[in-house]
Image 1: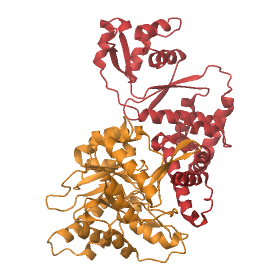
Image 2: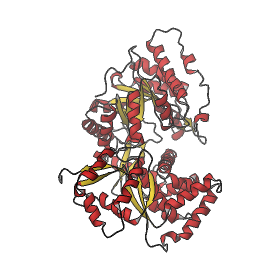
Image 3: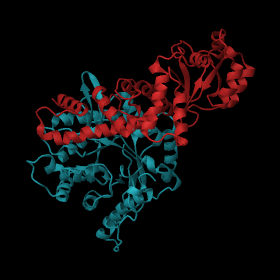
Image 4: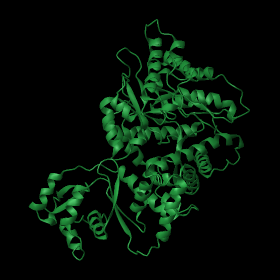
Length: 273
Length: 323
């Protein structure tokens, strides 16, 4: 009885419909329905801050309201809510929905990166690179490191809009939409002439997530080192072996990775040392 | 266990404020003379990053009360073990003087999925609800290794099937689980105000008298904390929404005076979540609570209830919202 009562009420709150057989409670139900939308819109506007700024509050909130009707919230922490929101945006009849869904994916990844576990920094361990065999050594990456691919150069889109806004060449949401439309047209909703996806690395050197475009080889290199599906993590030596037919150069990548705080140190796996 | 001896050296109640994002810098850069701050547990569930560091900084300056909002202790669907373990991890990190959540449900099964409503939803006050909530409270307390406080709700609907009053229900919950009550005095005001408005068949009631009677029905030994806040009537039908967007109302201060007289020096928190004032105004609200406590427990004959509660906050709250 209680279980059913709770299911019926929660279903009504998410669906926005009235409670069956309880017309006297609909005034109160409306408060919970409005509260859900307001809470979800607030939480998702933080997680998907870029998308929120491109769409504006009114359109963003309308999408959130529609999202809640199709996506039941299974997370107890609002900070974790919205994993499927990028795909949902793509199904919506808003301008540039594909491009916005890609930006939403990047937003979500950055947000998750910012919530990820801290990783200790010990750059003195870099000395191990000259002291030990590369097959014994492993890279400690920065907190929140994640890889992402997209058919759109998302960094270029965001940087362009930021720059034009700073220069006051675009003012307001209509200008942003027009700019996004130019990018959407250029990249034809993902079916670009460039069949190679754009690769990005997302990481959190301090508290704010960063992302940058990387080469396919760099993507492949980091992917090998982060790959959790392997029985054992790849050592630097093993990863270099797998990269030998590519143009990847550890000598070139390493100083850049240190400078950008992409790596926090090197460690020796006790099982192999 | 709930920390013992939660009073000041002068035998006054500990008085704290709820810490919200907009006040983080002020709270750290201009630490206030308050006894504790309350944080919402879920805002600090992240494994690392800014909020993680912030908590490290906050606990250097303040005693912490940890207030959870998502366990849904009245849910027939159990909250996931991971959720309680996350709370436990947080407790180990910040060693709170108090840990609390609400007498509500949040989890339910929809189409074979465990769904979380993201809100504090009411339960009917009957034996079935009581057994569900007691089992959940006991489970949480067992995992956390301590008793918790359970807060009364502001509820906007009355689910059918109640056989107890709210105060009877909560008293029985405390008896069954040894948890303590966190009484949100503003929630009593909200519920009393909305009583008639939500259901036209109900007769209008006197808000302060309702709250005092509610409190009189609660045994003194089960109360562990008070919450104070302001609320806003919504325009169309004057329903009162518990949005914590205003200073504490005079009615609520009056009920607080009564509550201290009845229950003793119980830790008290001033909450303000929307339309936030400056940090200084929030602390001034906490100081009003302190003055009322002095009025009840002290011997300062210069204090006067009307003077305390009618002190104007000099600056309009709204102007600070985006400062």
